[in-house]
Length: 193
Image 1 (cartoon, rainbow, N blue to C red):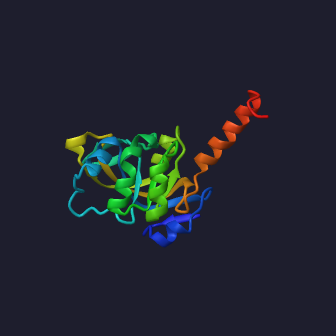
Image 2: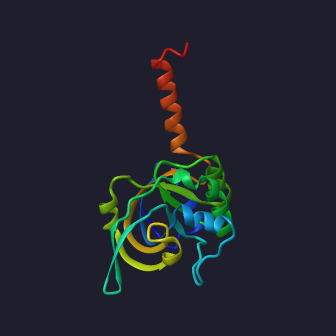
Image 3: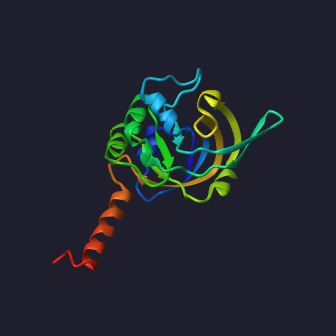
């Protein structure tokens, strides 16, 4: 299904675990340094607002030619590294979506439920394919301060594929898979009666 900007709370709360979406609109990147910056009281760039936005855990490979940026690779980074910060960033800035890989923990799941946000899983190892879904780099912030991978990139995307794996109802596909895997392992090891 299409998930088009504006990313309103109503649209996000309608999504459920397992829904495949194609994101269309402007999204922002943010990794470890950016999350810590916001968590510790740092400001967003002037004119940038994350309310009703989607933040992508991504350190893209971006080339500049004649003053124009081109995204070469835009794969997701492992999201759990942002767990110490994500709840507060969702709460404080009004995020509606977080894209990454590998899932997140209990604090982020609680924030998704309380504030109307979802975690969207993007396919790891498909960085070049995902870069093709970036139609334009509309801005870059904190490039000098944080460096290219940690900067806040502003991407316009078309049909960017992701799957809802944590929804605003408190459901987590990651927890379900972990539970089934643990049960299967216990059975194999003879740990279950």
